[in-house]
Image (cartoon, rainbow over all chains, first blue to last red; front, side, top):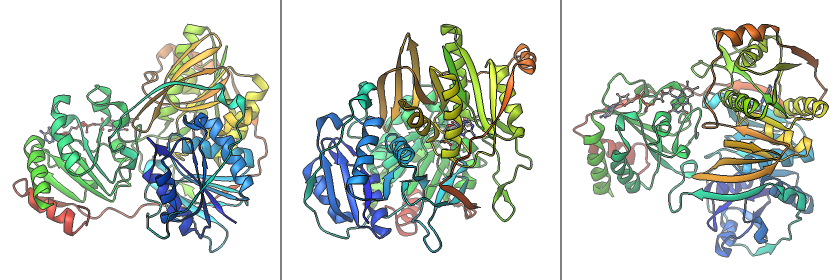
Length: 317
Length: 245
Ligand SMILES: Cc1cc2nc3c(=O)[nH]c(=O)nc-3n(C[C@H](O)[C@H](O)[C@H](O)COP(=O)(O)OP(=O)(O)OC[C@H]3O[C@@H](n4cnc5c(N)ncnc54)[C@H](O)[C@@H]3O)c2cc1C
Ligand SMILES: Nc1ncnc2c1ncn2[C@@H]1O[C@H](COP(=O)(O)O)[C@@H](O)[C@H]1O
């Protein structure tokens, strides 16, 4: 029986986290059917075959260009039925997570979000999910035949395992009443590497002293192809936009590398970064608590170290 | 206008997390419990709306008796009455069923929750409740204004914001900066003692998610310190040891 994977796109391109969802379903044993909604570049869709999709459904209806939660839930519920699929896999996101929940509720399926590893199917079917804001994990059994799994970044490794596939056009079932909620406008950073998707994050705290100093941090981020993040006081004071705020009450990141500059390492900040593979801390205070959570640390003044680090990285390339 | 706010009773954000009984039970030893921080935002916004729209605010928790001080705190902050659905909150679908069953009996105009609980972090209960009640669910909501029968909201999305318009009733999962957390004052604390707190039985649910065990992450190895004069060494380690660059 196929596993259905909902893939999200932004500006016509498939999100990297959705490629991880394909890799996850492929590693579960597939066969994988991917479904994309709204306008997406054809070459992007065909390429899904390389990452493990055997079949790619595309509902290109322009009405699907806005990510309306109820609309998407209706389409996916029907697609699961049409494809005779019992399992839906998707990447957790501001759209994916609520859609997963509503589809699961409709189907009476077992639901798990923030899943960090492939399922354990040695006895039954259990998944490991992140809980207590990254401070612990829970192994939970998903006992219903129908399952909806939302994965967290890095739950599976993207690999080239196949070749491009032909796209199967899909007619989405639309329900007028699902459109009652209206998205009137949106504002979104374009051309930037988004925080939840980034492999490397460069993050600044109150130690950066003011928004005018962010250009050096952005320069470092650019050199590393990294996204920029910040601590809560930094977004509270309006130095940086709210969507860059990392931690307990902000974005939880799971990059390969998190570089924290002028951030003290309060437990609420650590809660958002403790799933990072490597952590580098730059702080002028040798007793800053963040060093205890770090892999590499430098004690020193951010304003001296950032430019030097940027240069050293350029030189090493 | 009737507003329901669903609150969790969760370990304070500075808590160390431990488990007992062979990693099957949360260790409450030395842990201080609070209203979930996101739920606290939802409650704060509900109290503001109560004042501007002359609404009533009911708080609800699905939990055992030990969560009552947390409900009392919500009453002290300004909610009018409290409901405790007497059951261990075992999984999201179970919790959502309890909330939806209660909501059906009252018919709320607005159901506010936190964007996510800080114990399970599922971020799904509002969406499941929305589905069960046939209402829209919107989360994470950073701004919520209600005028007559419609609401204008701002929702955070990856790298930005989305502005929405929706007709009441609906469910919202809230986060900052929707309102400022409110701290109960003495008068509120006194008043909370006599406000109604009703305990209701749970509805049976055939749950599809069962806990097997908890696990703590492996302890972090010790940090390698690098001299500020030798930034190139950091680049070298990132490249050759961590294999990142
Ligand atoms: C319920 C709750 C939820 C919270 N959620 C979050 C959250 O999601 N995210 C979050 O970040 N915080 C959160 N907080 C706040 C958190 O407790 C801390 O207050 C916050 O993280 C501190 O931010 P900071 O490290 O930038 O600032 P500070 O604690 O002021 O630290 C600044 C650091 O910069 C260093 N520094 C100063 N100058 C320099 C220099 N020239 N070069 C190098 N280093 C320098 C200092 O040594 C210091 O360590 C939350 C708090 C609560 C109560
Ligand atoms: N046991 C509970 N009692 C009442 N409300 C809850 C409970 N668990 C979760 N909620 C609500 O649902 C929101 C989302 O929770 P979750 O889906 O667990 O992340 C929380 O912020 C609360 O508002």
